[in-house]
Length: 450
Ligand code: UD1
Ligand code: CA
Image 1 (cartoon, rainbow, N blue to C red):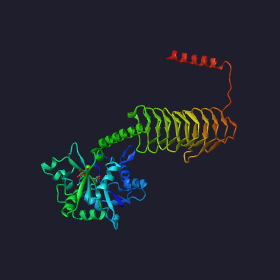
Image 2: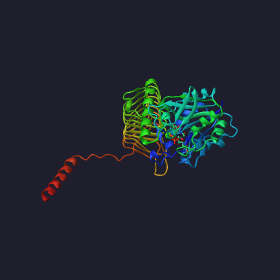
Image 3: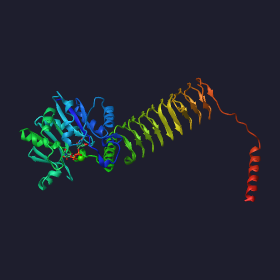
Image 4: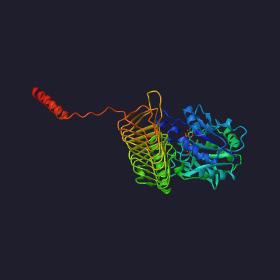
């Protein structure tokens, strides 16, 4: 059965109090909408339509970066969830398969839940995802008759008896696409909100004698985000889950609660992560590495046996080969550090490559930016870069070369050569004593005057 997704994301998200469309707010550094798209991807959808309203262009851009083929349907006025789905209709002309409708602001949906909905479709024309609510609050209520879902009643329109129902509507549904659009055609807006409710398709389907049922999932999966407090809570839920997964995979987290992960963080077995480490998007750490305390990593790759930090910053494009060392107060950006190389203290290595077994001395800086353009620094194998070397890019230092401490390297250094570029030292015997005496006398005169 071919399937397509419709993701509803046109709501204004007023309570976020934000210029950013609600579905673009990140959880674990990935926009909520992308979480929803990734959950939906388990169905290998033939196409995905996102219904947008506020901030449509920004939403479209993020969605297409995740999946180029994403279609966007703009809902100019938010007249209700049925009206929202109706906006996607043109994307379904001639499509014979199923459509699964989900919300862009419910990021915790688990893939197997969607699979169960599709399974339930085999004996039913329409499948709704429900959940037992601890506090049913304002959710729509599912009116069941055995396994048959008779109708969904919105809180605002419900009688007291209906409000006592705790089995609630998550908002997700699965149905043959053409059937769903024909059901939606019959939805009106004669209700307490004056909106076109998608939930009305249940009663309409039942009137046509169709089979409708509900599949249940746990409430945590349907958790929606409506405010910054919800966003923080959702992030916390995500972090707890992701840390537990890493521990299960054989990663040591010395203080799990202090490690902040991104949705796509990958860490190999037997890697040790010390306290207070932050992972931005796009980080892969292989097995047996050590990420020491207070390090910040994003868009980088750390190989087996590497040791990073404490207090290291790995920025996008940092590629650390096996058994490398990146120490305290070192920043690496867009640079390859080859096997066994060391950058141990107080350095900036950007737009560079560092060869195997090379040692970069404390305070070394690749001067990669001339104020207009970025340039590359190439350092060979087995090089010894003396402390406080400034490498003014573009520049190359050959294999086995050495730079003297404090050297400003502006020209390429041949293999095995020593580069020295600093003023020659002169020692003046007794001068320090004379200078001290002179300065002390000067201070005494000044103190006397005052
Ligand atoms: C909806 C359901 C309710 C369910 C609840 C679960 C209806 C009528 N009610 O209520 O039964 O318990 O979700 O959270 O469907 N949206 C649009 N365009 C619109 C309206 C909404 O794109 O015109 C999107 C929103 O951005 C959101 C989703 O649809 O992602 C749900 O809308 P929302 O207003 O939050 O629905 P509820 O009233 O909470
Ligand atoms: Ca809602």
